[in-house]
Image (cartoon, rainbow, N blue to C red; front, side, top):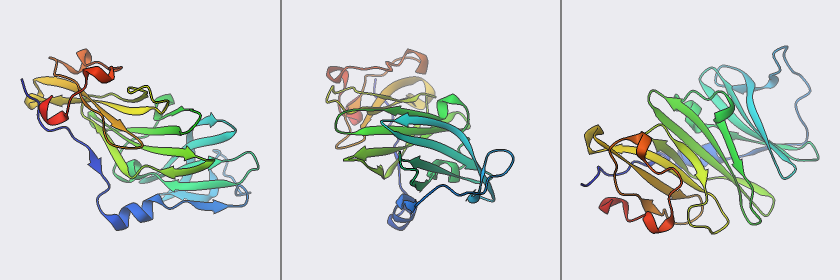
Amino acid sequence: MRTSKPVLVTAIAAALVTAAGMAYAYAQRPSAQDEAGGDANLRCGTTVCQSVIGRGVDGDMVEALTGAGGGRIRVTNSSGAFFIFEMTIAEAGAKVEGDKALECATAPSVDVCLVRGTKGADVLGEALVRRGGVWSRVSATYLSTGAYLALHDVDKDGVVDVVAVQRGCEGKCAFTQVFRVVGDDLGCTPPVDTAEQANRTPELSQLRPCAEA
């Protein structure tokens, strides 16, 4: 049984990718904060940014910030300097909230953080990577139509991959799609009947080109 073509939402236009991927460096945190804990000098959409969740990554703090109609990802280093990335999934309408909004994994060569949000029945995600102490954005937005998007080192190369469960066969089957955050995508698993049955931690040997899955 063949699945429908897997879905990967890439950045819509080069100009948008460039603008969204720019990090703005500040020498220190904004001094003004509102009573709810938001940074009064930092806006997300039409309102002041509010921190949803933060994760420590080898001395850096990565935070997902949201507001009405927008969001940002803030990375603060040990000296207090921080960098701001636009959160493209929030601008696309994803709801970013709770403990599952941010997942990070460390590795000797590449650290990865995945920000997740829900939009209807789908899960949208975007990733930041740190190489040589420098954070940058992965120029893709990930989509799971099977309500599961997470990090897992499928090819055992020491760098986590993005694992997404997808629905196919016009909703009558599901499969797992694996994206490398650095390099070519790894492929897809054979289809199963439901998204709940899809393998969320597949082995590399179980993957094949997605068009053949």
